[in-house]
Amino acid sequence: MIAIGGAIGAGLFVGSGSVIKTAGPAAVLSYAAAGLLVLCVLRALGEMVVARPVAGSLAEYARMSMGPFAGFTVGWLYWYLYVILVGAEAVAGAAILGEWVDLPQWVLAAVLLLIMTAVNLVSVKSFGEFEFWFASIKVVAIVLFLVLGAVYLFGLWPDADGGLHNLTGHGGFTPNGIVGVFSAIVVVIFAFGGTEIVTIAAAESKEPGRAVARATNNVLWRVGLFYVASIFLIVCILPWDDAKVLKSPFVSALDHMGVPAAGTIMQVVILTAVLSVLNSAIYVSSRMLYVLTRDGDAPAALVKVNKRGVPARAVLLGTIAAWGAVIASYISPDTVFTFLVNSIGVVLAFIYVAIMFSQLKLRAQLRREDPSSLTYRMWGYPYISWLVIIAIAAVLIAMARVPEQRNQLLASIVSLLVVAAMYPLRARFGKKAPAREVEVLVH
Image (cartoon, rainbow, N blue to C red; front, side):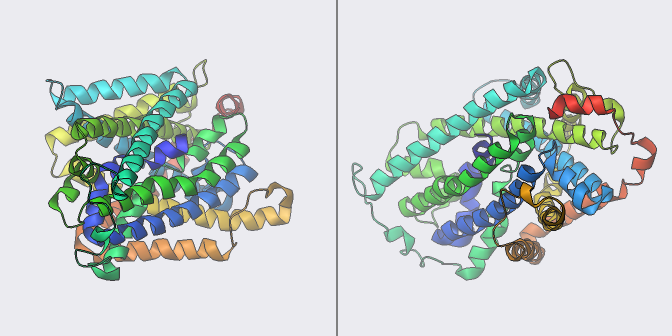
């Protein structure tokens, strides 16, 4: 459920409109291709988790395979990504609540931050319970949409046109050509960000290897069902060039079908998606900071855990840092806040590349030293691993060629360079935490 919650965010419910506008009905191909690429990354990560289950898997595997500099850079970059995401999601949630509650949005953002911080401070079980129910609401919403959309598509809905005519009736299946399909992949690939959270959470489960293997195996059909199928229904129900698609494709499709209170229902679902990401982002940022502290990449005081095994100081520091983004959204929404959001735009691409290089090197090492640990393997090693790296590089090159996406790429590169330049500070401030503190969270 953590994996599924990470995969279904507001990007699907709202952001899919811009993808449809870019690729037309062929957006289903963009989602399928991007989903397959991310699945391969998750499979590679799963291989490492099953063979060597550790807390903070992303940074730890980079450290194991490529050295302390790689571990430092990946860890802090991932922490930064989720800290900014905490602030951005709090702002987004406050904007939705502002339509129903007559309070300043900064107050609503503060309330959301406080509630989700409290949830994460209680225990990892508390985080898991909340994420389970958030994910459940999203799953129910998607399943209901798929059922209603299928009924409409087959002409069983009252006054329904049905059929597949919208797939080709407005300029063809690929109205903007194959370039439009590939341009949409650039956007879609980052919509799947969050599925890797399960590998971090697995370190605090009873059977981390088994949990990750099961979650990874199930991602493929989830992606196919929830993303590709829902987008397919939308482009069948509505013309892809309808202006309402860009605004909110799910709401527009339900309104077109005549579902009462569709807008309000989807607003509740979108708010749930935002809270889910906010909850997960606080959890992930705290665990990644914990791992950085454990490895001597951050001040040792942050590794201390409370009696329930929660790294409370790491949770609070991440929340305090996220407040910077929230404040920027109100003081300087068009400059500072926009830069902060852009600066995490393609950070996941850098993380994905690091995961693939880590898997390539660690796999070779394990084959020499402990082949029996490779019970869960990446497909087509090493060819598919290299193919994924090349594909992600192609995505970044494509972004550099698209003016609307170039700012995100440049801002994210700045983030990468700043984090890498901080590595010399490690020697001065980093101090490895005592082993007994480490064991509390890992086990």
